[in-house]
Length: 102
Length: 479
Figure (cartoon, rainbow over the protein chains, first blue to last red):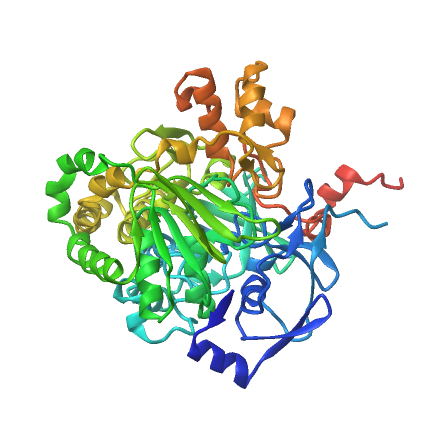
């Protein structure tokens, strides 16, 4: 688990950005990436992998490992570490491989 | 539809990119800086303008040095586009202008194009793959990732945390955590015995290096506060759905300790995806066990019109990166006709001296902290390719079937074909093939990398500006 240092916690508390993770509300600090917000809210994993379908979470936090892929506002395979939280954002866990929608 | 144009395109806003763009713009070069992150700084100075960690003692003065690069950059007149991911570069095919490159990039899911006469890649480094059993479990992240969480979001671990591996960053993260009041349960050093003896011949330079004083102070502080285990072998992360414990062998004993976080680090390597995709020649660096682009003293690659500055041109650290950025910018200004050769060489003098100072002593800890063979060349069912979940055993067995190179390996196992495009398996796969074949890694080579260098959606592609010519190339037109 990760926790916010006081100053970051203060920023998140005073003017939170509210998003949902699988439907549950999570209050974030403005400027947090989705992946950081997931860590801050106790989610070390964000998807089940495409081959073995086992839990996987963000690994590099700098846009190179692609382990933090999540569905954001209905769009799958978004990089959580490269996307900033926005008020009302819907973040969903991915289970297995994505499919092309008709 | 107007296309953005510039004389010099710098890609990456870390120390090399910021310094290069500032220098070039100062010489009157029409300069644009594209960067993937929302704010300047790269990874080393990540979130330097936005961090919620404003108590300067926590991250330390070396981090805050980054701010001294941002102000001059903002005042330089260089254009800056954050949140921009470059995914393709091609030499200009249009008739006019007759030289330069077309560059495709995306901002917020929308693809765009620009034209640039000269390119400078300042795309930096990434952490070396650290393939141990269980490194894919949630709860296991890189030490660099942990540091990014601290810098960019003010996050620190709140329960049992183990740092493991080798290299200065491991101690730096530990020190920053201590400053922030976060507890570390253990620091597991994988450096094998005997390394100090190998490093000692380089100690003279190290003793005169700027690292020495700071490094010793930092290590003393960490050693006083964190249990450190030396000579750690067979490091592994255990757990069913997430990390539950860390096991290792040391001093002839096997130990297991409960942990919620394992932060791994064994050095950084150049980020070669873009430099390889543009066709620049790369060489295997025997001392650092990684690929690096072949560049001259000015950062010029083997591709005309494309330079590389900073750790992306070979690991030398953040201070060296800014001086390398300035040198590459001077060269670009010369190539673009803003200054002559004499001016370039004259202006380069102080930067060359500063660069020499910045790299002094690196050979010492490059040797000391070289990632051990066993942690670069895994065995058994340890995952090598995180995306396609390919194991070391599979790679080794496939070599035995006659698969002799990494590109063939893709066809056999799909390793390197997931979204990270080999960034976290390429080195390991090349080294495993070399080991199984008993040949040098340089003979095995690396994945052939192609554009787009980052995955993009069809929707992003479709958003590209279209000319009548491009439309006619794919659409059957009514006559």
